[in-house]
Amino acid sequence: MSYEFLKHTADVKFRAKAKSLVKAFVESAEALFETMRGKMQILEQVEKEVSIEGDNLENLLYNFLEEFLFLLDSEDFLVSEIKNLEIDEKNNKLKMVLLGDVAKNYHFTNDVKAVTYNDMRIERGEEVVITGVFDV
Image 1: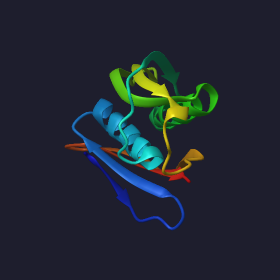
Image 2: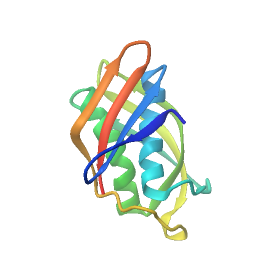
Image 3: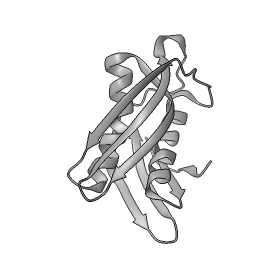
Image 4: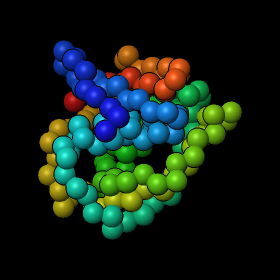
């Protein structure tokens, strides 16, 4: 696990670290998944190909994380694994394959209402560090 939860007064704040931007995005998603469902294992019954665009890199991250909430709300799809994530930084686009299952088969630990721009940062150095907040 390359993410941690930080103190926040009302919501869930996280920090994800990785050697690459792709891995940092995946770790950010893992923080979201743990916030939603704890450590529960999700079966890989369904596969979806997804493409996402953003206005800039932070907006791409926001849209990436919001996509998981959208799929849950609109298609009752709960993600188990992100595969083949490719990020095109020049054009602020990404594509990925998601594996997961029907959400009604599982119990959730938290109701994540939204991803927020509050404290959202992508910092680059020896590692890529992403900080963000989930509205619960």
